[in-house]
Amino acid sequence: MREIKQTIEQEITNAKFRSFDLVYRIGVKNHVRYWLIGALLLLIAVLFLPWTQNIRAKGAITTLRQEQRPQELNSIIPGRIIKWYVKEGDVVKAGDTIAQLAEIKDSYLDPELLNRTKEQINAKKSSVGFYGDKVAATDAQITAMQQVVILKMKQLSLKVIADSFEAVSAANDMKIAEAQFRRQKIMRDSGLSSLVQLEQRNQYYQSALAKKTSAEMKFFNTKTELIQAQAEFLEKKSKAQGEKAAAQSEISNSTADVAKLSNQYENYRIRNGMYYLIAPQGGQIVQANKSGLNEILKEGEKIAEIVPLQIDHAVEIYVRPVDLPLLSKGQKVRFLFDGYPAIVFSGWPKASYGIFSGEIAVIESSVSSNGKFRILVGEDKSYRPWPKTLMLGTGASAIALLHDVPVWYELWRNINGFPPEYYQTKEKNNDKGKK
Image 1 (tube, rainbow, N blue to C red):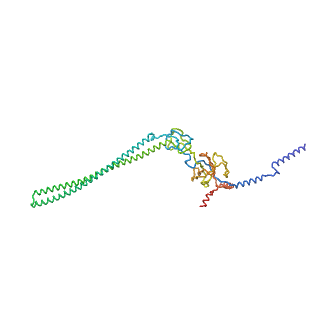
Image 2: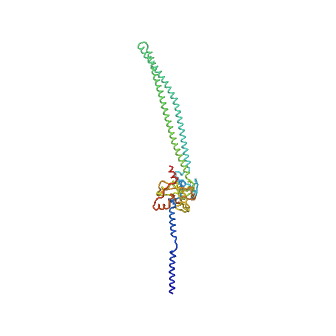
Image 3: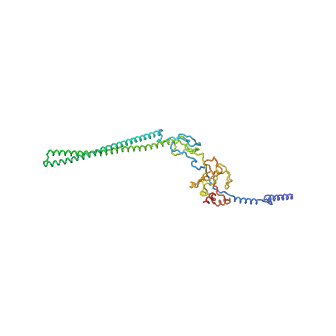
């Protein structure tokens, strides 16, 4: 029994040693060293592979042109909604009617407002015509007065001349009669003539003096008539010209009233056309601000939005100020659109799958409210086309490609917190060399 027990213990001891050798592979040739060396060499090789530096940013789908973005449909005038022609989600064309409004201001409630305003315009135009006829009649009256006064002036002027000659003749007759009377008196005093002869000469002298006085009075009266005729003509002419000026003033006032009423008429006519809200462009109706009939719209208030269907897609992204100097117009940007699967290798864009390419189109020069700069990126026509089913507001992850550097350099740069390499394209460098 003792020998059997020793044999069993010996077998157990041998089994333990065999298990130890099997577990720790004592005496077996090991290849772990070669695996470690190979992994190290592979890691070193990977460190020297090219790595494309990039700037990442989040964005959303938008458009490059303002008229292709969602447009608010506003009511220019206040009004009451009496009919809807579309509902949310409907697709409309440019010129389609969206809704009909009714007037709510008492100044425009009269259904015959346009006709009544037109009647006022016609009445004012007739008034302008009447006053124009009055001006023409006054001109004709002034012309007739001028012709009459010219003839009368000529007549009185000739009469003045004739009266002046008559006065001169009477004065000469008086001088002759006076000289004869004086000589006759001298002869009477000398006793050469009789008293009767002296009295006859005296009578003749008195008669010549009376005629002279009468001729002078007639001459002065004719001159007075001439002056009075001139004054009377000037007075009548001034009165006629005053009436003409008053008529012309009325014409001016009536013309101003016609212009004002015409302005009001056009405003009323245009306002009547604003009772129907028209789609300015084709698109889909969304976000209706009013939900029923008889709701009141204020002046300039939004009633709905129109989202255009035909748009040129772009991506709106925001980058940090520290990354802004690394970007330029025309630079390539890769995108991952939400809802479109993709496999991305950050440093190897050519090995990525499901990504899309774009070109920077706009770099805004002012910082946005979020402290970043806004960038608009358009589609890269030379690369894979963007999906046609993209919608405004769809999220996008942007990767702006920069310089190619070794992997070890990129790791070292990130560990030290250095910015990416700033570089310029060959075309820009060639342009600088030419300059």
